[in-house]
Image (spheres, rainbow, N blue to C red):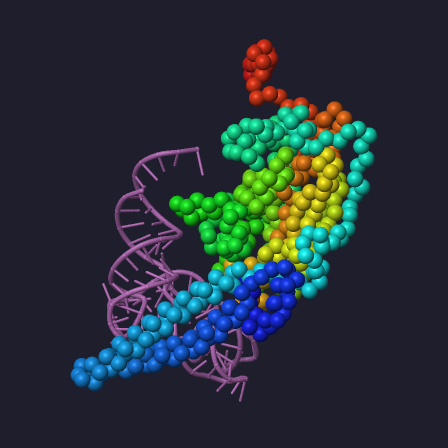
Amino acid sequence: MLDLRLIREHPEMIREALRKLNAEAPIDEILDLDERRRTLVAEVDQLKAQRNAESRRIAGLSPGPEREAAIAAMRALGDRIEELDRELAALEERLQTLLLEVPNLPDPDVPVGPDESGNVVVRHWGEPRQFDFPVKPHWELAEQLGLIDFERGVKIAGSRFYVLRGDLARLQRALITWMIDLHVSEHGYLEVYPPFLVRREAMIGTGNLPKFGDNLYHDEETDLWLIPTAEVPVTNLFRDEILPPGSLPIYLVAATPCFRKEKVSAGRDVRGIKRVHQFEKVEMVKFVEPERSDEELQRLVADAEDVLRRLELPYRVVQMCTGDLSFTAAKKFDLEVWAPGSQEWLEVSSCSNFRDFQARRANIRFRPSEGARPQFVHTLNGSGLALPRTLIAILENYQHPDGSIDIPAVLRPYMGGQERIGPQPAYWMPAQARQTREQALAGDA
RNA sequence: GGAAGGGUCGCAUAGUGGCCGAGUGCGCACGGCUGGAAACCGUGUGGGGGCGGCAGCCCCUCGUGGGUUCGAAUCCCACCCCUUCCGCCA
């Protein structure tokens, strides 16, 4: 949410920003509502002051004609106040609705562009590996080794659902644990485990509602919403709070499943696990003082990059242009890892500075010093990283001609020392193998 | 799921229609006292909004939203949350 005062005082600046964003917002109606609201507030406040004074006087009057007359007069005044209060409430609700649909302003240094074609590659890291054999996409590798059961995923839950099997399921678990450990022990984050279902207000706080409800799963009965990212519950941790002096910056990291309907992308990326309805993601969230948020964004990007470097996966950092910025971000960098099998750059992380946009919506403030007025914090977040696409990158970058996969060195301690992923066992064994296995297990016991 | 109790100014509490537009204690801040400190005394103490050049004035806020009333922390309704007991459950 933008500061209403900013819109009131610099409407041209806002309109200019909206043009750059390729977005529209009802600035004229907002200005009109704001003007009418302030006039109305002044009027109704004055009437209330009058009522308060008169009621106090009535309290001191003894029963009689004067008292009756005063009460009658106040009854009329009360009716008038109620009428104006209703008008005011309707007006404020409308104003609030409109304000919630105005996007954040881009930072002045964000490159201007119409859409993703205007994004800027900021830097590359690592050399794409050269293969002397035909490279396979991850869905072929996964199918061949029995690492992903696509058919049964679809049977259980429909398209864009999948089942990870054996070493790949374990690799995902290892990655999550390793990533969180890295962010906690080397980058200074505190791990949290938040709810995966949240109230409507939480979704409004991060900007997912009211505009983007069609990408969210929702339970009507309880009015709870499945999170599309840990950003939602973690950012809302401090909703309606005033953080005490000295509490910033706060760095939090959480691994959660993410649920997205992906209706707008129907038909896109249907092969493999690039775009799915349910996936795991490690998310970093920061609450910082406004003056520091630029610097904190750079550190956040670096923290996410560190994950890819240690996995030795070649990637590039892309800055979103104005036309490709998300609704809530003032500035955003994506990390894209090279997937040689799919022959494309995969977005595995998105790091944004929201400035006070989410803080205003969620009413997250801090006290700069003892006795000072509360101020809105700046919030930032970045993936560190999203799991399915990281798995894709590992499968495709670390593949051998026979389809087997090397496990990145940093993950081996989290995989019981295992170095390579080969064909996975079937769900059930042939009868003879089962017998042998059962005998062996009985022997161990 | 059932039953009961409860949400008051940082904390603890008082408060069943107008001396509560919120008292007291603690905490905190400033001042006094003191060589210094404790104790003591005094003053102040949240959030949001409107008007105003400033000083300041006014409105809202006793979980949230409605209602009754000239007037609501107090009465009524709905919702949210917490506690206890019972049931169920990993």
